[in-house]
Image 1 (cartoon, rainbow, N blue to C red):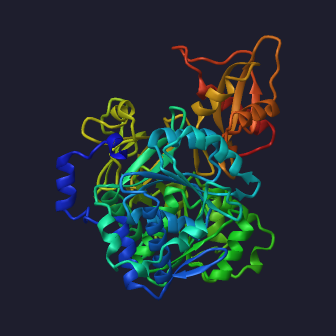
Image 2 (cartoon, one colour; image 1 turned 120 degrees about the vertical axis):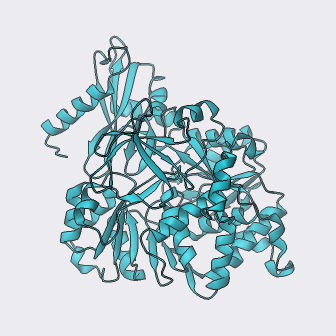
Length: 554
């Protein structure tokens, strides 16, 4: 049972959040059903191949949920969903919500290392995956992984190549017709508000990604305030998803709030700037979230003026640090009348600058909490609350914040203060206007274009190279992506190590492209702190100097 690894919320907080109506005893399935009941004929979802009204989307979700039940998949089990940006991801995700199954939200680029890790943690009964995506062939990966996990009885393939012993996503949609069941048939399988909505992987400092379990009532609260904080409760809204749909930001800051309001979600299959511009013009998008790399690409587009962006009213930035000069250039070039910067975590906290606030807030801060009932503190290493203007670690407690990582009892003891505040690992301060400013981080992770990558996970793989004696992986500054991966390597005596050798070695171990270093710096000795630990602060300063010497300015 997946619930065995869940850290429960304290009873007194549960009572408080429910009494205050911050938690409204709703599940994500309830939200979806209400939206499809109210806006039945309104267009809900558009991707590269299809357009679906709320009623049509509801029909497909119910069909897939019934098919999962027919396969024997039941409440409190888990299913890995590893699909690209497409309507089928939404169908599979909400079908799971209808029957109390917790999806593991895997990225298309997750490879053998991550998928086996997820299997070991959650014992999934099914894996929903494409046959191929671009250059990635998933069938060989399935053949490697599936025999190791006999409890994974079903592999559902989205695509034309469905080997014997696997199931076709398309066929499952046609397996069962909702019209053959009573209208309320699925209600008996619905989850409870305190059940788990999904498992969201996160980058971290302990090697492989941890999994974040979110309860329905907490997650619905998250989506509600993400929606209302910016005043976007308009059924005419057209929001486009340009980031991987499996990301928490795409679900809780984009898709769920739009469904709550009866708006339309446009799923862009591409992350490229030119494709984003084309989709905005084609679908008359009025709001979208873009990453710093995407914003830089849009502003560098030589034919920017030929795209009709007149529908675009709101731009939101997030997932990684957005350089102030990019924000100002976007405003000066009138990409959209209003823009917002933000900070968010899969663990729950979300802050945003408001659309009609000063440009300086968007350029230099990440705003204020979306949920007014979340408590934000800046604390020192001893947990003492600091004054405004003082830098420390950001800690958060409230109705949108998770209760702990899955099957991570010892880790959870470290990341929560005695009074229940989650230590985010981010360094921050509040300015005199009460806006949050993120200044750095304590966690040893690399934020590459919004992907949180564990330095330790890469180090543990690099160190197995026969020519490597020691390794330290850091993020090196990058104007577009925020950070890229740099590995400082001490070779064994008489050996040399190149970037190509390291990349090949990691690929041979099943590492995904997200884990591959983009630069290797050989060193004779690794710098150490006074207590004998790797001095990554010195390494970060070293790579910054080298990049500046090479003419790269940040």
